[in-house]
Length: 246
Image 1 (cartoon, rainbow, N blue to C red):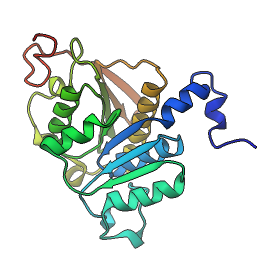
Image 2: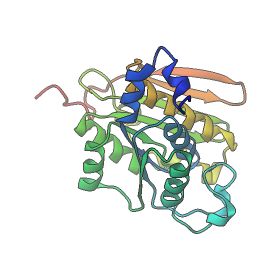
Image 3: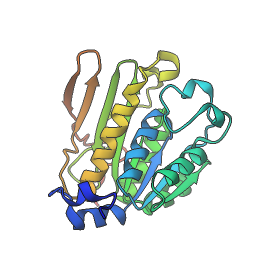
């Protein structure tokens, strides 16, 4: 009888060894919105051993058009708890942990240190900078994604930062004026596109397929095109600038 992993096992880039690495991995997902829902579904269905879902927000009706793990019956419930329950149904063989408080300071660092890959799909710069700092400190792979209007962005950082940039090299200041989907809108499937790509990048890391950690990929749904921008490591970056200089 074929297992649910059959297509991975026959894929030469994965095989038995690669699937075992996926199964033994831990992923921390920051944000269980449209991006996080899509990423979590594919990571769970791919057999990632332990998914930690962090979101302290509750579900409201405006979420339902793009946050595909939730239904009208879930309104008012914690996103992380509902997402965790749905993911356990999707794949009963994995462990899923719901974290419903805001992760910051030592608690955030502790969660990052016990994780192999961090996926950041949250909707504010303050959290993104904190997550980035924790990933630099713990030397962890960070996959960052965002979506707004008809555009999505994806970048991969770490786990070593001696010669490669971090998220703070890309955005020097917490520029909230860049906006979010609440005030600017977003086409419903676009967070799903970015979340799916983030899941791909996580799986690539587990099976040793290299990713360029010095590029920002911008998806334009209007033209169906990707633009790639080189990210330069900032010499005096306050987060990663001193890595390797001690």
